[in-house]
Image (cartoon, rainbow over all chains, first blue to last red; front, side, top):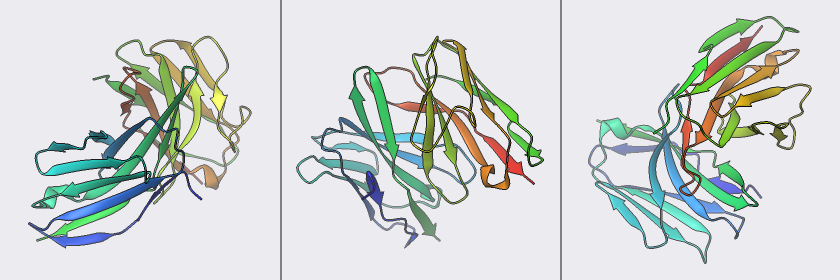
Amino acid sequence: RKEVEQDPGPFNVPEGATVAFNCTYSNSASQSFFWYRQDCRKEPKLLMSVYSSGNEDGRFTAQLNRASQYISLLIRDSKLSDSATYLCVVNKYSGGYQKVTFGTGTKLQVIP
Amino acid sequence: SAVISQKPSRDICQRGTSLTIQCQVDSQVTMMFWYRQQPGQSLTLIATANQGSEATYESGFVIDKFPISRPNLTFSTLTVSNMSPEDSSIYLCSVVERSNTGELFFGEGSRLTVL
């Protein structure tokens, strides 16, 4: 089983739609969680951190369920500019060493 | 946020040669990482570049193939040695600016094509 699993998609959604991505992780000792966005032929950039209490940033909402080892990202009112690959990222710290694991990414295409 | 410069941004190389990629950060950072992203794939960690000691390599990556230097807290190099077409990939330098948040910042990547 992969350490971080995502549905690769692609998710093709019309403008204005709401879309949700899920991510599961296998290491229960994982400590911090993020969603990154990667545009075609560009480097990944942080979209948002994911907190146990859930957090929202404009049209984006991230949720963490530690019991189920599950992370989600919800995008409301999709824009064409949201088209990208969304990477689930899981961090674990041990003895001053940080291990960062990336999911394979979920590709989103927003259609006019 | 940290600003990371990578050189070269792209290169086309012949089989059997070696290429060194440079990563310069505009601030001192404790943790620097080298990732590989093969076409259509996600990021795979090659190694953690440790300042003043040998790099820590992930499973499947060895120092002879990917020697890494980290002479100070703002600079690192990754060499891809004895290249083959399978090494064609994007190589990304990454740093953690504040270890308590865990947020990674990436360079723009070095796109390598091996013929």
